[in-house]
Picture 1 (cartoon, rainbow, N blue to C red):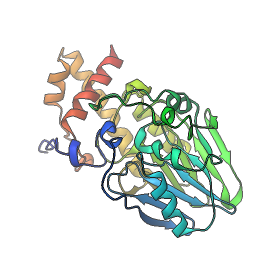
Picture 2 (picture 1 turned 120 degrees about the vertical axis):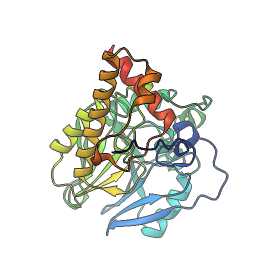
Picture 3 (picture 1 turned 180 degrees about the vertical axis):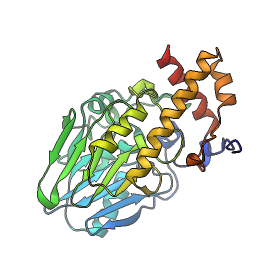
Picture 4 (picture 1 turned 45 degrees about the vertical axis):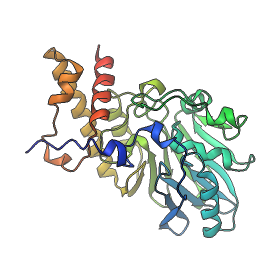
Length: 307
């Protein structure tokens, strides 16, 4: 098939592939939160410029929020939740460390429990620069707020919170987008939030500075697809709701990308040469969005891992 056009402009305007640093920049436009109902007690919250998709799970005695978007979006999220239910927010689960998924934490009440994977807890305490981001480093939002919003609890491989209709299962299968990507499953609803290890059908951001791995991400996604049962719908990090079949396809896409970089290295090609000649030639991946800068950064991350 024809080589897929490289949508470099998406690095600027494509909200699902924008640089993390840009997503952390101060937002001056009105923060409008939109709620998509996925079940009677589960909503996906989105908003232009807000960052990652937020899930709102309304339990018997309180609300669990998965990911809290960019700085300044915590209060708009809370206001939207008040429109959906009178119940208080009792827990935040962050899928990973990046600012466009955790920064709103600081605007929630200090009594809210924050739960993450072990490595994400360590990453959030540092908030290191993100691989591939061109934004100037900024002080940690958690440092600026005296540690407010940092995780109170963490898990290694699996954690179950609640029971019955309130049950939430947390899974970790290995490195990918970062080294702490959590899969958040609402088993009675057969719905999962995957965060940015499956942000959408695009080249993932491989954040090596926070433990991400292009070599491992495909295997990690396959482990999740094999290890998590009875999920029909998947909330992506930045795109639309998809399926486990899409997760499997995305796993193979990433494995194919690694194979292409391996072939390029065996041919003694440079990172620039591999990035310039790489193309999508599999019909399964038609429509995947590719940003030029993201492509070069990912080739470099994978090439470094293969040394």
